[in-house]
Image (tube, rainbow, N blue to C red; front, side, top):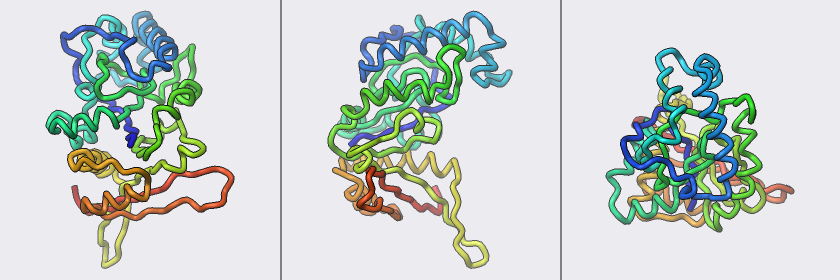
Length: 268
């Protein structure tokens, strides 16, 4: 199982640890692309605060992120699992996993990133600010920039089992599973169900979406479950108590497609 996650916009401080060792990051085939993004981001933030604020889409209250980006090469690094915070990661609760669940998490979780392309939760990175929606002056839109390098490394990273795609739309632009990998990929949408005047109404709510995805991954990890494919994932989630509606792709088309899975929740 490979679980694709978005990062968090807000991140924990890097701390006083050793700085980034780019050569130690997972998916070494992304090294050249990572170096190019890092170089442009650092130079942009060091040279022109006003332009950097505009490019990164930062409010005045977040201008401190610019100086942080300018000092990325010497900044203290921590594991990605410690750096990424927010609703999804709070619900995932990596720090409180037992040893077996943590080992499965380190094998299975891959976090997409505008700066790094993708990292595993055990990779040590500094705290940064650079979303996949950023358009750097030299490299262009990062979602498009990462497509070629990700296409080179992701088929091997996907292995032969389930690919559980929990990324937000911006991060999904960097890599789209194709061919037989697409056929064993499942995307998940979280729907909140409410009864209004006796009629069920369903909607996508960001907080429910992020928290449920984090809790869903945690439950798979703590139960030691490693589904072989989308059909097995549906059964695993139902066994864990989730209300799941699955739509398998139609057979016979020229291109394989991912499964679409809805998880229906009424409360967190």
